Length: 147
Image (tube, rainbow, N blue to C red; front, side, top):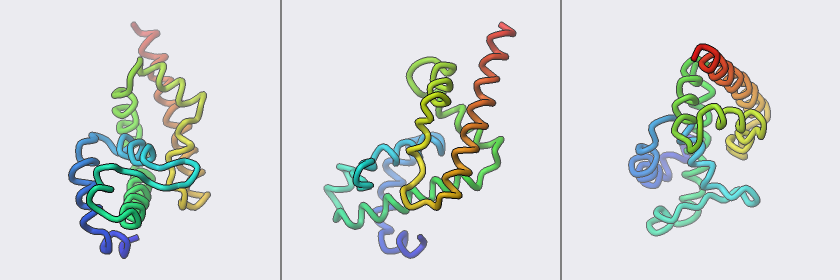
């Protein structure tokens, strides 16, 4: 990964400084970079970068960034992940409770890992998300019952 970052340093720097820096939480960044990936081909598309850099450099750089963000989440303590996820889901349209419920039911988080992530890391990520969503849903229930 580090070799890829060095080769495409300007693409990574441009993407992180102009795009990712505006997203206030790590889960939000992961969701955003996942949204740039075509699910059928695995190809990342970003119009702003495409105007400046070759597609191969963009693909390699965004793959690398996706992997780094995913890895960062996995290396973060669960309590910090919970705070980050809470902030991310609160920023989405609709009620927080409804968003948490939909995420649990639909398991929409299953598209978030990079395609090249090892299965054991994907399973760890999914397990963590299921636990975190249960915690957040319990918080919603407690808040409702104490209101």
